[in-house]
Image (cartoon, rainbow, N blue to C red; front, side, top):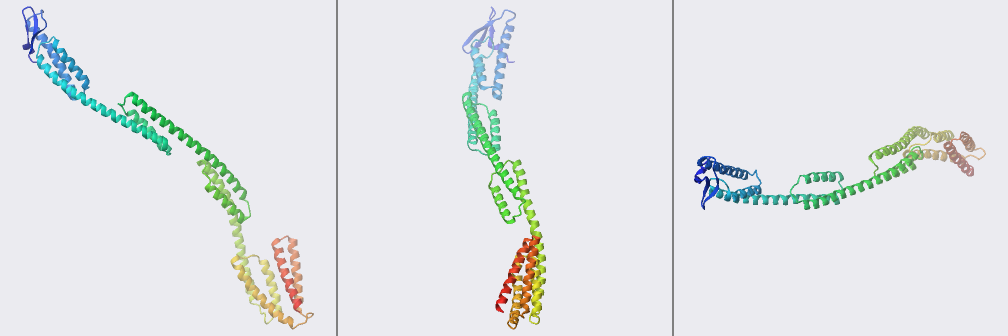
Length: 402
């Protein structure tokens, strides 16, 4: 400790003085002992002031103390020096405190500027958050993303400090209103979506019912067209809820598959049957084309009639092959008819064995028709009627030509 006692004295009656640039002033009285002890006592008080000043200066320079609080302490200490009951370099301490006051004022000004800047930044950040929330509430349709972002905004909001209470309250009202508006708009959207999904479910349930009605149909072409139309309606209908959509689609698809599987099986069996019929008719045609019409016209005619009967009984063949086969068989028939016509012209009607044979064939065709009707086979009846009509026509023409 410096020898602050040099800045004071004690007179004969115990009065203690401190020396300043303006002269001496009384700081106290010492009656308890020697004058040196009295000076040392008041010097220790001054040392305590020095310690408080040094601590204040250190905290100010380190930034650990609030500059305004330090300035207030410095001004208090500076004002107390005029009547301080101490002995020491009061003038030097006053100058030191004046310098510290200037430094504290500078730091207080800087702190105010920093606080103002922080307040402005905090205000700008909260304003930006409010504006973002209002935009989300008014425009966003990314409901989950926007909802998550509003939660993040709330977290950021709580971390921002420094906005005055009035302004903060006004901004909070705007944010809360935006968040509530978004919640209402999102709720209305999902309510509408739920209503649409329920309507879509009703539509698709009806489509499933229609498809299931058709799954056992045997009207292959017509029903296939109906199912195709139902599929088009399914595609343009809105989607139901995920669970309902999947469940209804499985039922709708199952009904379609049931119909088309049966149709495929029937068509496959029919195709197999027609391929077998084709092979049979190809064999009959080869047999017909091998007839010796010129050498034995009657025998060729009789054999051709047998072939024609078997031909009708053989049934349908694939459409692309039917025309060619019929043309080739008609060519054989035309050749036989041509040869037999020449024979008729050379034979009297009464002696014409071909007419007798044709009458027998008509009778045979009538018997075949009767058997088909008795069996209740519509296809055989139709084919027998066609064969009988053809034979009667040929007989009529033959009789007219004789």
